[in-house]
Image (cartoon, rainbow, N blue to C red):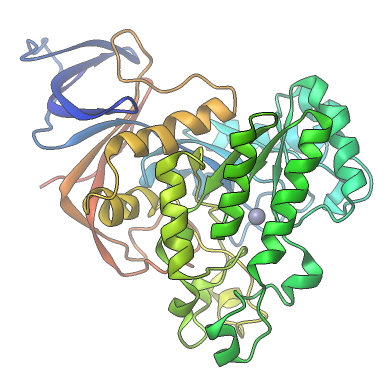
Length: 428
Ligand SMILES: [Zn+2]
């Protein structure tokens, strides 16, 4: 039994925080109310001034297993999730071998069952080996519960292949997630085309490389009657394209934005700092602001980190050769709090809706709720504490993040899932 006293409970439906005690027993929220009696033998946490939230859910993570375990494993990746207050994740299938068949899906899910303390879901490839030619083993993956199909990391070059996959898989209730980029326009896929790319002398990737495919893939979904989810949108015009299609209302389109595309610009790259290298690339301040407005307006259904670990050796190469991506799960919630909630840009209700409830709805999962009778899936967050993202703090196997050694406001103090306390940070 765990009694959390005087917590301020956040929900997706209200910006107000309801102060209350919460009693957890046998993995169920037994009661919520003021001044609950302390049951004999209960562990008590005084959560005065701290925020109680449902566990976060990240619908876009790269765990690198199988094939690239030096960067991350399912075990280290899920521990990074817990460290950041995330209690469920969806893996991307660009592993080696790629997750493109029932065999690989079952291997991944078996590993997760043994090594993860939180639920792990996986997406499956649209095409075999992510080569963009033949369809992957969609039927077999569906039988194992896969609902999201994506060749994330690359766009499916041939629109006829994607259209055929949409026509085939939509009747099974599956949906598509698109990484949007015309490779011929994107050059070496290193950074945005703009002042920084000219200064560094590297051919940049223009925003239109992304926007063209956002529009193309929504049009294909429109034609096929499919559900399309647009991943990690980085450009203002890309966001407006999604808004336009959503306003039409005749195609099911959802979209995600990553914390780094809300927070950083290509100018942060400075002198070739590879911790700011990702794909789609960081763009401009105007894009940051437009994406933030898109998140507030609901053009973006969810926040997802695109957690993309790489080894220090890989990231220490020259800017063009270094791989794309940054880690995100250790830092996401604290950075969103520090930059947006603490500054009054948006409230906790938006975080709960866009980083806990909507990603679970996208995956067809029950939403985590802090209500009597519901299964325990919650975190406690201290807005008055700070977190310093030292290498010791990070649970991801990799450290490629712009937040390394930064101190931000906010700290995840407690993560409880079912009957288990997954994280209890030493609290002052
Ligand atoms: Zn991607």
